[in-house]
Length: 293
Image (tube, rainbow, N blue to C red; front, side, top):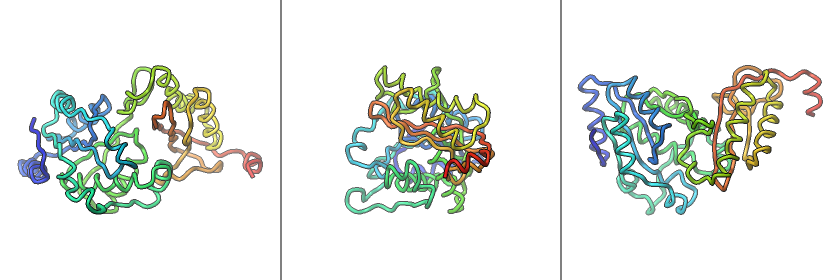
């Protein structure tokens, strides 16, 4: 496994792989790697000849310098994990390498309208323009490739798909299933900040999703109510619990039916946690529509 740190080395390594007739799989991370990242690298390993992993904590997507400074950095452990999991190349660029004028002047960002303005975007202004900027740069530097992203950050995945489509980047985006601990909690670098009791409360997110998957199909409103009830029972402060269209992320109405996505953001011990899952909704009876007005 080779470790690189400059953009020139990065571009050269990807170009060299393609020149040798090898397909390139990309896994973009912010480090603090866990089994969820392992599953992305495994998917890249299975589907591509050459696996490139990037580790970069992107300051543009943080709302405050303190949040950025406090993000866990575990580079040595991350590099060892990448080697163990079968990465061929790991890129660990500095902030100065990625954003040479960061802190001196405003950095170029990428805005994906509508998708970026809802849910997480509405509650974390500027977050997704920073995410979209760094993802666009990572994909551009890597070039023609297949990029693997986790479904846990479902809104982020939708935004990446849209920007790749709109900008006609030579990238195939693959969404990979959320990886969970044995108790159902979705793996996240943030989980280490939960207390023992907080972790027990955090299980409300996955249990709210399980409630929907094990019940007969509900209307969008009924499904929202069911999720909120489970979250409340577990003492989760709910930022949102919504049923949305999988592509547009638009909140579904009681009249909508078919395949959709349940998305949740909850706060436990001051830690913001996300989860989501597929759901099928049915149109509510007419009297329910009238009762909602």
